[in-house]
Picture 1 (cartoon, one colour):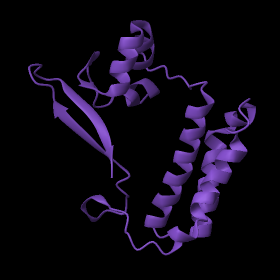
Picture 2 (picture 1 turned 45 degrees about the horizontal axis):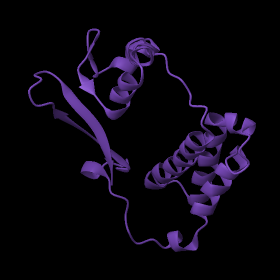
Picture 3 (picture 1 turned 90 degrees about the vertical axis):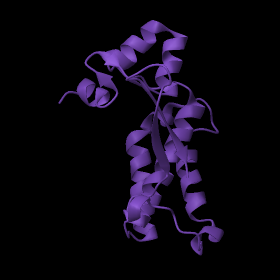
Length: 159
């Protein structure tokens, strides 16, 4: 299965998009060509916005860390794997001109969060759906669009 086919699984009926989300609607509203290239043809793009990429890097690190903890990995090994994921997926931050949003500061933010003593003895359990070992960090939903049979809107809420 090609990248374009994987991208379209569940969102399309043939070439017609039937499941819409805020990202695809926003791209269509911004520029129909941008929508066509990104959503119909499946050509992704990486934002050049350092703040967005930095935030994505920190989010990835914390998500990997939390998922590994749920799966029973010890804190130190989970942190190492989380930092590795950030380095492998966000090496472009080494070129950031924004000195507050570099790969180094993203890695430090993940370590700082993990090393916050208040989180070590956290008695609040991370919620998992249906008893699975996967944390419900962002829960996806899909609802019918009233008056447009066969079309749905999707999104996610953070638990």
